[in-house]
Image (tube, rainbow, N blue to C red; front, side, top):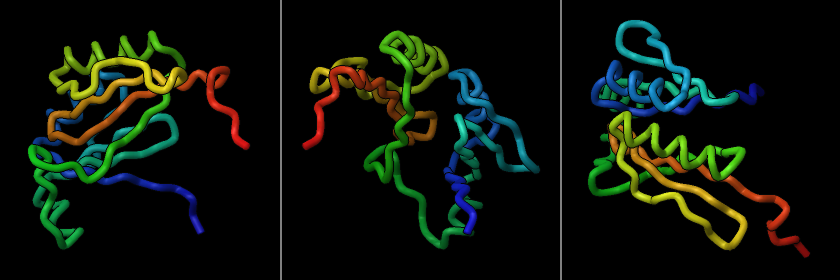
Length: 134
């Protein structure tokens, strides 16, 4: 069984979404006429127009202005990386719903929504301060 996972996201405008993701440092490119592929580390995310997404899933897309279906978490190497990344998101037109901050004394992160309201967070975990398991 293949271990590759592709995440598929519905978007209102593939070109605008691809531009946004490129501006914040993801590697996006158009694939075919109406879709794009983003690569984040070893993860592939495909962007599809809303109607195409609904057709192949057989379901209506979530109204991201009223609800969230998932949040995508991305690891960061430092607090400074989190801060710089969130600045890029703001500059590119994303919405910050969780300003950079510390949680539990060992995690530092921030949350944002992309142009279509999909939720993401960037998280730095200081393993030297991480609680030890039993």
